[in-house]
Image (tube, rainbow, N blue to C red; front, side, top):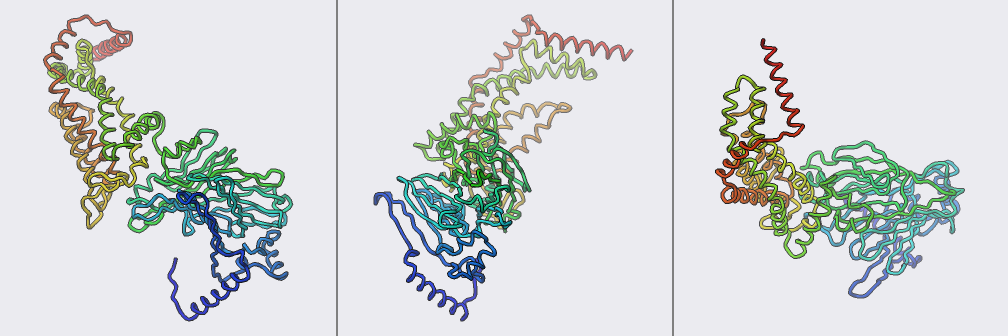
Length: 620
């Protein structure tokens, strides 16, 4: 909001407005602030209605029409809905409804939520988390009337009415054509719940709204920044929706001018850790989505992450509207969303396929168990230890395979030297050696591939774990954001303006591990067509150091702990379990045994021999 210079004219205007306000308060006692306290003193829910008058250069729709001339003027622009402009509610009054976790403010103008505050959450600066505030959101119905007018509910005034239904607070907002004809929004807020019931219905408007055209629901939101790194937060901010029963799609990280789907059951304006979700109790026939990235420069664009818009055609039945929905304002927390049993767990980016399965049914339940009695940082360490112990048999097979290849290395070198001018024969003899010795270079790769689903699942889990938000560990103030041990007076491209310690420690651990596992390979001559292992050994830690400097410190803590444990397991296996002499003796024993070849192996050998014979014939 711009600061206005305070001068004499402003003072006069302020006095006049004050005088008008006093007169209105005196003559309209029903418009005074009302407060109803419900429940026990220990757990009260407060429902308030506050009147806020807004000064405007144009007061055509802000001042109730009190004579026939004003009514006729309203009819010229609003038609049948001019009646709404004659009511006392035709002012910018705000109605507040709240429970233990959520506070909503609904304006008479548009009947829409103008403020949604999460009462138990704070952002990175310690300020309250608002999903809606300061005109960052809009909820509008656009329709045509039977007299060919195009109207928008955001410009019209609704009449509020608060009531109770058991423990639930109900707010009815009616846009009236007459005393008994109206368009109505009904908000029903339940105790201690981020999900509210929301419905749109009409009564007696079949001759007012043109039912041959769809009513367009236009929902827009500019997502507030709530995390320390706006770039990192923006990476997990997007529109996601469910269609065709159980399929889901999303807009992605870049700008999306328009995407469209049919049979939509819910639409989520997902921020990293907070979301607003509109759900249909049946389904929307279709919806169009637009997403714009608002962060072009993270030094300048620091308030919003993305701008979202969803346009939904609403069908009229019998000339009337009747849409039953739910609306969620709350954390993007798997535990909370999954409890609604509406497939809302898909809003949380846990990975697709097997990766999401591992997170949902293994990692999350176990981490919830650990974090129930351990601090978040210690829970991460215990989770990492458990994962590594479970994968240790797979790693053992990998190390045994590496040991066999190490023992066979002298014989492989002899074959390479003997047949250096005959690549076909060299490959054939090498395969024979592997077959006799019972070894294979692929046997070391397969165990490593088996670990990838677990590693990738955890890569998705830690950045999405709401339980890590604002949890500290050692020097890290927030495990869901980067840790800082030093601020830089400048910004390094791709690295940032700070130094994080956990990525440095993780990079060192990765470097040590890769030195231990690839050092032997680098001592041998580089094979043609094979990747440069020395280059990979240096690239991986460097990638970790740069890329993870702005990532969640909880993820870096996991990688640091994981690689430390891996190094320890490898040292134990190498020094106390694997005996190179025994492996060599076993290989020699395997060589003496006759090997029965399978059909595939025999066919492969026949093909190699035929190719070799063809090569000889060509030389002749």
